[in-house]
Amino acid sequence: MCMNDIANQLVAAGKGIMAADRPSPAFYDLLRSEGIPTDEEAYRNWSELLFLAPGLSESVSGIIMTDEQVRLTDSTGQSLIEQVIERGMIPGISPAKGLVALAGSAGETVGSGLDGLRERLHEYAALGVGFSKWRAAFQIGPGTPSYYAIEANAYVMAQMAALSQEAGIVPIVEPEVMLWGDHHIDRCFAITEWVLSRTFEALYLHRVDLEGTLVKASMVLSGNECAEQADVETVAAQTVKVFQRQIPAAIPGIVFLSGGQSDYQATARLNAMNANYELPWKLSFSYARALQREPMAIWGNRPDRAPAAQAALCHRAKMNGLASLGLWKAELEGEAVAP
Ligand code: 13P
Image 1 (cartoon, rainbow, N blue to C red):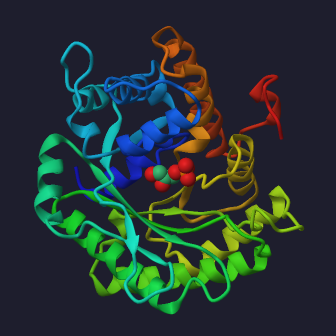
Image 2 (image 1 turned 60 degrees about the vertical axis):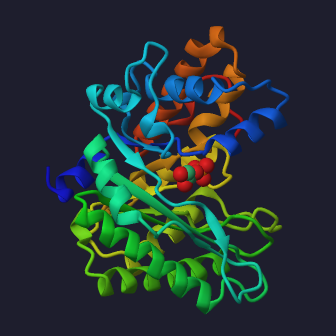
């Protein structure tokens, strides 16, 4: 399949991506912080629960995995990645080795893991991986993000994108402008515009084929500690506006990260964009927390709770699938919604 076909399949009507790429140490920390006991089977069980949830493929086109997850087998010894493909979903990889301190900057970061990436991507392609995802994280603060951090991250993402395409893998570049801080939404808009413009300049320089690339973006939001919180309509309008300025129409789709928004906010804001605007690209989801927060709380590493956790996961995926069409309504959520 050509990369444009894979990219279009990832943002097929009513579908989005599930980001499941939390590495096992971070996963264990999360379970422990909730007072949930862990053992070495927990990571495999959680991955199996997510990947093989009955009906997930109705709203999920692809799953972002870790290096560990693409090699996992289920409790009967069958490869998980093969079962994901059998269910009609595209396996993806998060090939970075984490964010590391950017030398010479005061606390900013850059994604690491370019060494040996060409060989690893070819290996992932042979395992059936169809797309990759690489994150850059920008914290808004006094003097940040810096020109240096934006340029450094744009180049690293573009190198990853070029290497992915060389291996026949669709790259997703993820320049996340983080939610944390007391900044006004206007500052988030300005930083997002700057970051996107430099990211696309780097993709151009690295000869990346835009028709075979997706963007994983943050929404334009008020900082979580800002006294004035923008409403759903403003978030949708500002986010669409910044994309119209900086994301070429050749990109088949933009998928959002949830970035600390509540499940409900992430769905409602995505829906508002799709319901109210004519757009040149598909706008969909690539959520981790906003899909898995509730299922994880239900599961709590108790095997008997897996079916209920899977049902909660499929419900959130379905709500976000509807939002990607502009067809979601709060009434569809049932009683458990806290707007
Ligand atoms: P969140 O939706 O939790 O922000 O995660 C997105 C992500 O990039 C994980 O791959």
